[in-house]
Image 1 (cartoon, rainbow, N blue to C red):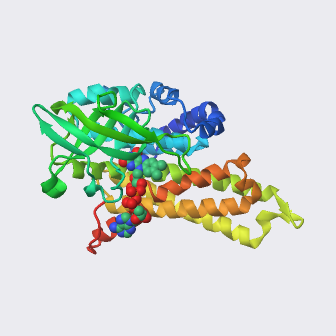
Image 2 (cartoon, protein in one colour):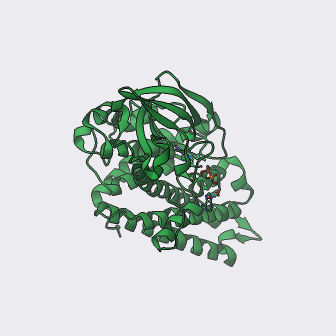
Image 3 (tube, rainbow, N blue to C red):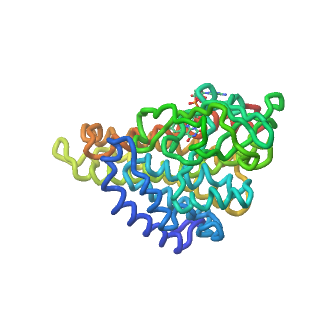
Length: 386
Ligand SMILES: Cc1cc2nc3c(=O)[nH]c(=O)nc-3n(C[C@H](O)[C@H](O)[C@H](O)COP(=O)(O)OP(=O)(O)OC[C@H]3O[C@@H](n4cnc5c(N)ncnc54)[C@H](O)[C@@H]3O)c2cc1C
C-alpha cells in the first residue's frame, strides 16, 4: 500500500530513476570508490533528465514536484552502491540550492539556481569550520562590509563537493556582537581571487564524493552576492538543515533496506552445520527486528515529509527522523555484516562499503547528540540550538 506521500506518478519516477541508476551509475561504483571521486557527468546526466530540479518551479527549469519526488530520488540513488554519489547529488539538490529559491533575488536564481538544476554548475554548502561543527554559532568566517560589497575571510572544512564546486553557499558572521542576529549567507563563485581549495580530505566512507577544506583569504564579493537579509543567516541556515536531515535519512534508510534484502537472500542460501543460516532462530529474530525497525524509520520519515509538504515546519519530527534513522541504519548494517560473515567484511559483496557509508548519518548535518538537544528543547528542557 502506497503511503499518502506518494501517488502512482511518484512510482513512475521511481522506476525511471532506478533504471538510470542501475544501468548507468551502479556499474562504476567500485571504480569511483577506489578513485575517491565520481565524474562530473553524473550531475549533467541527472540535470538533462530533470532530476536535479524535482521540487523546483518550472520557471527555473524544475519539475514543480514535492517532497515525495525528492525522497524517491534519494531512495533510488542508494541503488548506486556508492553512497558518496547520492550524498553529493543531495548536496546539490536539497542542501546548497533550496536557500537560493527561498531567500534569493530573481537575479541570483537565474544566475545560480537555473544552471544548478541543469547540472552545469556544481554547488557546495559551507557551514562547518575546523573549530566549529555542532556549534554553528561559533563559526569565525567573517564578511566585513567594504564599499558596495563585502570582504570574506575564513576556513570551511568537511565540505562535500568542495573540490569541484563552482559555487559555494557560505555561512558567515557579519556582526560579531549581534549574537544569532550576526550571521549572513553569501553565494560565492569559487573562481574569485582568494578562494582556494586548501586540501581534499580522506575519509572512512562516502569515498566517491569529494570532501574539501576551503580557504577564503579576503575574497571580495559585491552586495548582490549576499543571500537573504543581512543578519538573518542563522535562522536561514537552520531552515536549510531541516531539508538536509530529512533527505539524508531517506537515502540512508533506503541503503540499509537494500542491504537487508541482500542479506536475507544470502542467509537463505548460505549453509552452516547442514542448514541455511537463516533457519537459526537467532538470525530469524534478527531479521524480524531489522524489518520492524526499518519499517518504523520509513513511516516516521514519510509522515514527517508529508507534514512538511502540507505546510507544517516539523523541526522536532525531522530531528527524530534523523536520530532514529541513524541508530536503526547503523544497527541494521552491523547485523547484516555479522550475518554475511567474512564475505561481508571482504570487498566483493559491497556490504563493507554500505557499512562504512552508513556511519556518517550519525555525524553529518547534525550529530545524534545535537538531534537530542533539539528534541529536548522542544520539550522545554533547554539544550543547544542546532
Ligand atoms: C563526510 C562528511 C561530509 C560533510 N559535509 C559537509 C558539508 O557539505 N558542509 C558542511 O558545512 N559540513 C559538512 N560536514 C560536517 C558535519 O556537518 C560535521 O562534522 C558535524 O556537524 C559535526 O561537527 P564536528 O565534526 O565539528 O564535531 P564536533 O562539533 O566537534 O562534535 C564532536 C562530538 O561532540 C559532541 N557534541 C558537540 N556538542 C555537544 C553538545 N552540546 N552536547 C553533547 N554532545 C555534543 C558531538 O555530538 C560529537 O559527538 C561533513 C562531515 C563529513 C564527515
